[in-house]
Length: 215
Image 1 (spheres, helix red, strand yellow):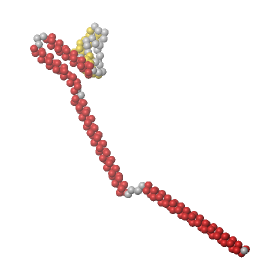
Image 2 (cartoon, one colour):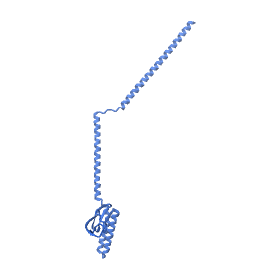
Image 3 (cartoon, rainbow, N blue to C red):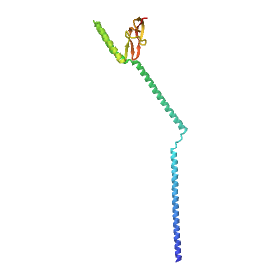
Image 4 (cartoon, helix red, strand yellow):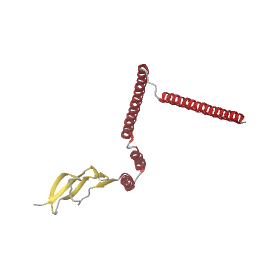
């Protein structure tokens, strides 16, 4: 009996050792498999990283490609320069034409406004042929003059100056003669030709006779 129990005990021990050995072997195989998978993943990750870095890295251009690129940039710059030069030339010509037009037709509005006065003068001359009263002709001319002066003053800021008795001002008046008289300061004795201002600028000095205090 003791011999049988001893054999059974040995068999149990052998089975336990065999199971332990099998478990150890399985764990070792599992660990080796995991290590292999980890290594494969690491290699795959490294390969993917290298591939990505290789794709992102700019490809170095050959001298021929670089020369072609520079030639294209040079051609584009020349084209832009020619276009700008052409635009500037067109602008310059347009400005010159506008300046010439302003010089040639700058008085068009004034002349157009003067046409009414010219028409009135024509009508007055036609009426003068059969007129028997000189006063009516003079009145017609006086009305034309008044209308013309009013238009020039109100629309073009043209102002006439120079009347007998005004103080003499060399900036406004041109003295064509001088005489002595009973005056306290120099003044206009007679106006031979009216002066005119355009706004604040004198465009024609009045031609006058000046009277000065007697010595």
